[in-house]
Image (cartoon, rainbow, N blue to C red; front, side, top):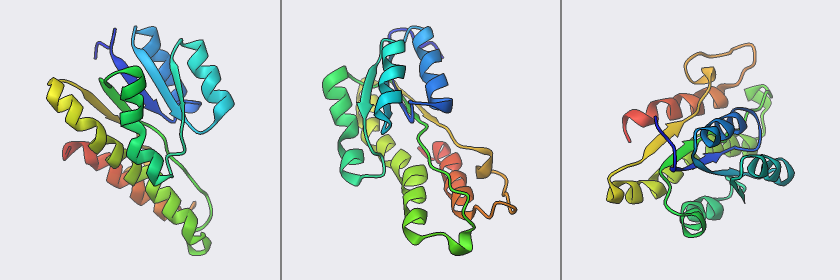
Length: 165
C-alpha cells in the first residue's frame, strides 16, 4: 500500500508492534497519528516521527465514541486506521476477575469494531480508505497452558471481522 501523504492512525502506537508500524508508515511518507494511554512513551514516538499524539484510554466508552471525530477535527480525514491496541492477561480463566475479562473483551474486540464503525462513513464518502486489524496467534490457535480463553476468543473474533466489514 502506498501511504505517502495519507493520514494514518495507529492505536496502541506507543510501543511494540504499534510503534514499529507508526515508524514504518512515517518513513514511507504518511502523516501519522498515534493513539495510546501511555503519555510519555506516546509523546516520544510522536515526536520522533513528526506525528501527532492522542492520549486516550480505549477501554472508556466515551473516548471510543468520540475519538475518530476528535482526530479528524484536529488532524484531518483518516485514510488508514490501524486497530492495534490490545490487552493480554495471563491469569487462569477460572480465577480471572470478571471486570478484567470485560476489559479485555472490550479493548480487543469491541473497540476496533466501534472505531471502524466511526471511521467508515467518511472513508465511504471519500471513496477511499484502508482498515488494518492487528491480532495475534491467539486468534487462530489456543494456548491451553496459559488458560487464556478470553484472549483467544477476542482475537478470534477480531481476526474474522475484516471479511465482514
